Amino acid sequence: MKVGKKLYSSTSISSIKIMAMLISIVLLLNLFFQTFGDEAFQKMGDLSLMGVIKFHIFYPYELIMYLCTIFIPAIYYSFIRGVRFHEHGIIVNRGLPYFNFTILYKDISKYEILQSNHFLSITSMVTEDDYMFTVNDLDRVLAILDQHNINGDLGKSAAGDRAAHKKLALFILIVGVLVSLIQYSGFIRQFFR
Image 1 (tube, rainbow, N blue to C red):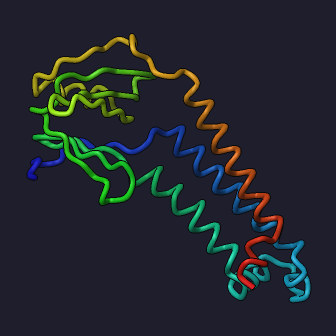
Image 2 (image 1 turned 60 degrees about the horizontal axis):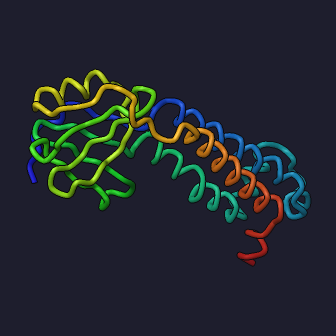
Image 3 (image 1 turned 135 degrees about the vertical axis):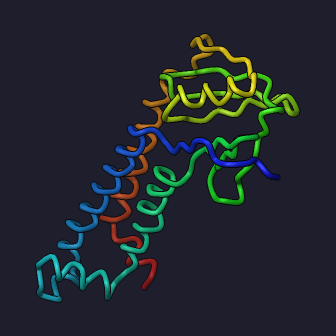
């Protein structure tokens, strides 16, 4: 389906990017410091930064687990995944590339600004589904939607769950604590032996 030239592209908002990167750094430091307590590392005798790197080259299980479960998803969901506005429609990436889907402007009945001038909802005429996503430059998106004569609600009458940021922070905190506990428990090392 041809949607024309790309007009605007948006990834996650800055606060989500910062939070994901901070959590990635904290968990990498956690992995680094818990390496010093490992018996195999202490037997190597080199207690320097290069020693830690050499240790994770010889025993890559925990580093691979960190990369696959923390670092790569944080980069993907913070900087790659997003929404792209084109001349004739919107391409929404809801995860991996095969989850991309297109919504043509002619199939949109209305839009609504939900929260913090970064959260937008559009309603499809065809399926009557609401699609919600974040945008970094709301004025640019509203200009694109107005050019296609799509009616919208600029108010915050349907402001979603106000606790969404707290729930997201709590979820990330719980996942971070669980990953830290798994790193410290040595479960991954025992699993791969």
